[in-house]
Amino acid sequence: MPTNVPASKNFQFPLRRRTPATVLRGIGHALIAPFTSQRTFAVADYQVTVSAQSLFARQLAKYQAYEPLNSNWLASRFGAADRGLFVDVGANFGWYSLLSARLAPNATVIALEPSRENFSLLRQNIDNNRFTNIIAINKGAGADSSKASLYVHEPDNPGAHSIRKPVAGLSEEVISLEPLDILLAPYDGQVHLLKIDVEGYEIETLMGATETLKRTNYILLEYSPGFLRECGHDPMQLLDLLKLNGFIPHLVRATGIEPVELHRLEQCDPTLSHGKSWQIDLVFARP
Image 1 (tube, rainbow, N blue to C red):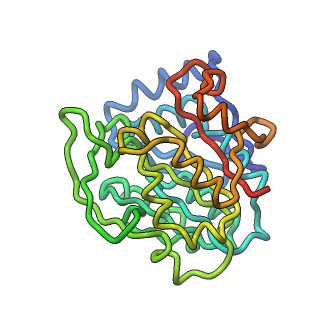
Image 2: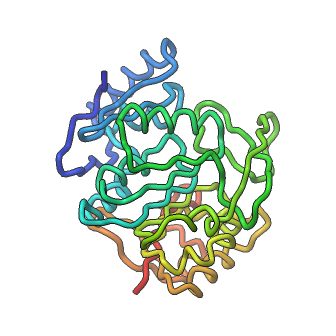
């Protein structure tokens, strides 16, 4: 049965705050996790299953949400009237795919996840919730049709699998890549949201999405200059590419999204990352 996360009809997830309750829930999870491979949590009127040893489980157990700022913005922006497409590149266990499918049941969600293990969990979550508007594809998005080595992170963070040059000790999995323009060609309609979480491989993903970008309204991505450099790219290349396609970067706040000046991103303004490693979530929107 789902545990810990109460149902929420308005899809407003609590923000991360350290409180006695979150500490106690974290301790409870730490006592349970060594004795089970998976945990299931309620999210509004559906549920998600994740690896019990993963940071996803810790976040859901403690804070009753995963990436709540992004999730609350999605919930405030999209709804049942939206048709068209939602595209989740690097879907992992399916948090954004499931949320998008629930928010916009008349839309089609395309969920791409190249890792075999993550894809299995994604399929499990789709099937368990009986979502019929999610199409799961066991591939990554690249500049062309090809194969690549995916370096698989430790079990505590299955969201960190990457094509970047690996640190010592990571296992390797050969994955298939396909341009988004090819993958999405059979599906008509506006792309309301293109979410990209590919650990530094964003340039290649966007190079294969020339036509897709023309019909995309919003892009949600994790902007990490360090990861981009490890993949052989100047971070400015990403910002320039999206600017050329008519997108303006925005920060995600509790009250919604607000524009951010490009020079602050170029200079890695430390106030944007709150003193942590320089990696932030951005929404790119058309004016």
